[in-house]
Amino acid sequence: MDEVNEAATRLATVREAIARAAKLAGREANEVELIAVSKTVPPAAILPLIEAGQASFGENRVQEAAGKWPALRRAGTRLHLVGQLQSNKAREAVELFDAIHSLDRPSLVAALARAQAATGLRRELFVQVNIGDEDQKGGCAIAELPALLKQAGDAGLAIDGLMCVPPAEIEAAPFFALLAKLARDHGLAKLSMGMSGDYETAVMLGATHVRVGTALFGAREKA
Ligand SMILES: *Cc1c(COP(=O)(O)O)cnc(C)c1O
Image (tube, rainbow, N blue to C red; front, side, top):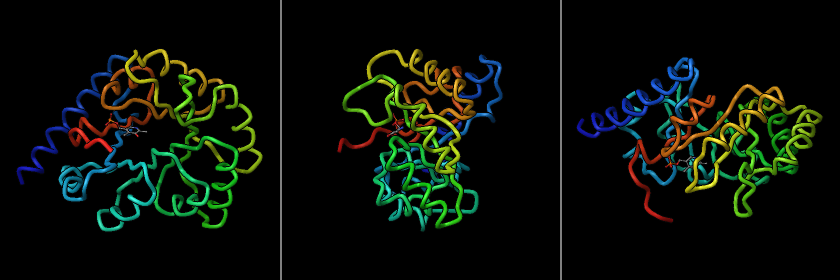
């Protein structure tokens, strides 16, 4: 039970920080979905958080999630894919995840449109934007966002929002503000932004989904 108490304490700390940040920005805390990013975390360490009441979890690999979650999943569990997705895994991802945060290219728009049509499932979808224009980062280039959104519309794929991972080591706020502006410009309501180091800033700037790993599970082992 100690583990459950510890998980509940971490969870309460993060939830309180989200509530404070939301209040400062004149928002309601329940406008923000806290996603506990459990990539690399073994089931035994995820379970206490589930028992403490956490419902939304994030994984970055389809294979890892497919191995871990069928046994962990409860009624009300929401699974989010926050890592890159190969087109040939689109169908498996649509079947396994409630939300996909990493739509970033035309081939994946086509694959997800086919997967949703074939399964009859409609998932929450975010286009990931390479907001800091970094060579090594996933996400579609800002300049390519309008064309990708148009392609999704033409394919009958409803996009719910935008996601970003800003450059490391520098202030994230300007990148969050830019993502929020892009979403407004395109009439998209949802913003997936903010991780352990900057989720409060993200909430103040309009995040509807924050993706928090380390602050809930402790440091991950380096890959
Ligand atoms: C790992 C990961 C997170 C969580 O990062 P923390 O710094 O541990 O909170 C959030 N988003 C994405 C896309 C990730 O890969």
